Image 1 (cartoon, rainbow, N blue to C red):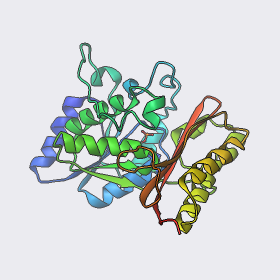
Image 2: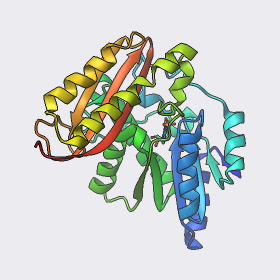
Image 3: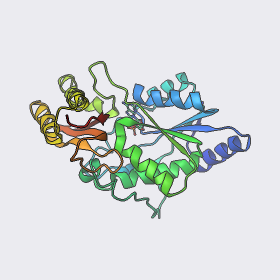
Image 4: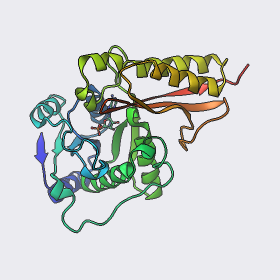
Length: 286
Ligand code: AMP
């Protein structure tokens, strides 16, 4: 595995592969890798000549009050995992290489960036879109892989690639979960054993709402109310930021049953913010 830290060298390396007709599959990450990340890596390996992974904790997607400094970092363990997966290139720039003095350009994907998590994390998706656009220009992938776990992020990235005519295929891979349903996340490392057990309530809440919707016997308000109740009944949850049914494309609220829907949740357990979601097909009310 080649480890590259300098954007210009990464770009020159990618160009060298492109002129030889090789495709690059790319998995951008912030490190502290778990099986969710590795599922994207495996998919990229299956579908491309070369696999590139980036590890970069992107400061501009964190607000000053968020966990940029304390975000879990374990480069040695991560490198070992990527070697085992036979990744070809690990791109690991530092902050100065990505944002040299005088940096002024940002990408803003309007509307969908402001909903759901965007309402609680102002500027977050601007930071995400900007870094992903930079990484795409540096790594030059044919395909890039993202997890459904961060559903809103996948919508923002898809919109950006379409709006800016980026010739990159975006693949969304299923959320990888622990045995009890908890979505894997680097931030789960912040949870105590007890909080981690309680966090399985997110998946239970989504599953119950999905089952009600699929049975076609319930109203939207009842689903939303039911979800919020389940979450409020869990003492480890200190704040429910949102929980309900949303349009999977616009991310706006849904008021009527019918078609596809996104069930999505964001809660806080103490200082730790947890998100999860599920896509469902709703039947019309009987
Ligand atoms: P992160 O390191 O948190 O920025 O995540 C890097 C990529 O891994 C993103 O596309 C995430 O959506 C994806 N990812 C994170 N957790 C999971 C998971 N549990 N299952 C599938 N993909 C995930």
